[in-house]
Amino acid sequence: MMTSLTEHLQAVKQASRVLAGIPEWDIEDLLLRLADKLEKDADTILEANQKDLARMDKNDPKYDRLLLNQERIHAIAKDVRTVAGLPSPVGRTLEERTRPNGLRISKVSTPIGVIGVIYEARPNVTVDSFSLCFKSRNACTLKGGSDASFSNEALAACIHQTLRDASIPKDMLLLLPSDRSAVQEMLHARGFIDMVIPRGSQKLIDFVREEATIPVIETGTGIVHIYVDKSADVDRASSIIFNAKTRRPSVCNTVDTVIIHEDRLRDLSKIMNPLEASHVHIFADKPAFDQLHGSYDSSLLEPAKEEHFGTEFLSLKLSIATVRNMDEALAHIRQYSSGHSESIIAKDQEAIERFLQEVDAAAVYANASTAFTDGTQFGLGAEIGISTQKLHARGPMGLDALTSYKWIVRGNGQVRT
Image 1: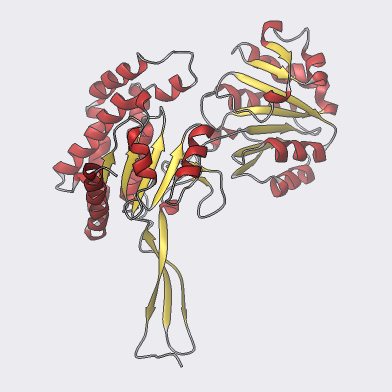
Image 2: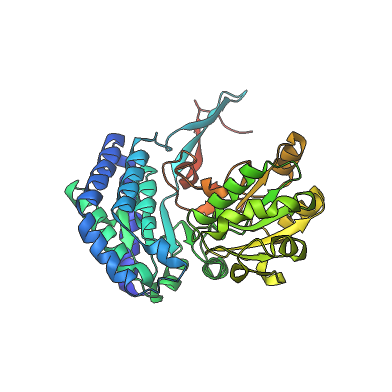
């Protein structure tokens, strides 16, 4: 590892220890100052963002994730203010008991230490990561993608200036160089980074999982299904699917596959037709294709191939699979799901409860759009990622997911025999 990078990582680790002595009201005050500064420096941030956008093809699915505007900067600032106002997740007594020998034992939430985040063309992650880490008294080391380098540097500059103005070490946040040379050092930074979170493509997540010698939380990839049960309300199905596909097609909670019960094929055109105006390209299996042929724009409709299932499109593309019953719907999800978000549209309460119980995903919905899988929408203020694994954290990761715990034992001279 390069000496200079080691020194930076050591400084972040040391900064994480300083956080323990900062009063909670100073934590909140700094985040409120940061939110104000983001809005004040919006023009500078947008100028940097334009440099990044100029290098990317507008047809690239990542373009929308990279894009910042006044509205999105205000939304980022709003999330920072929300995080500032949330209760601290640190120092809470999670359990306590007194043993027969008089020992008083309590389980108390603690910071993890230093959180590492590797992400692609998502500049909002820079601010979300810092605000959540700082509120939970963790320092953070960030490695953004080269696609968003100018944007990330502008946002990090806002954070560093806010820290300096508050006389708090700027090493609470380390933004690593955007080139790939720093990735290996980061993934092997034992003793300096306590947990790393990759946010991006499956390729990135796989690379981090295979290369890291520090703990990893897998996030991001969303191969998302919506099952239209035979008891579904047609208008509700149409509205939910339209929202889940078109609201922001480049994000991980967007629906990729609609699974439809064969008894509802007669309603498929009504369900899907609103998507046509948004130029959603549909890959339909034979029963669904036959039903849509002639009622959906032929230039946007083609027969599905195996590759169209189990694919995270991140664009205005959608596949349709027809099933004969709930068993087949559940089997399809088990085969192709990434464990992110899954939804059922139904009136039959028994079908709903079975789906909610049997589908193995971080977020399982009944009669609602999967677009709600988001830290802010879940009331977490923001998120540092959406975990698709099961150990430690699952689903949108807010403040609680950035804590561990320790056992505190109080005695009066007890010894073990």
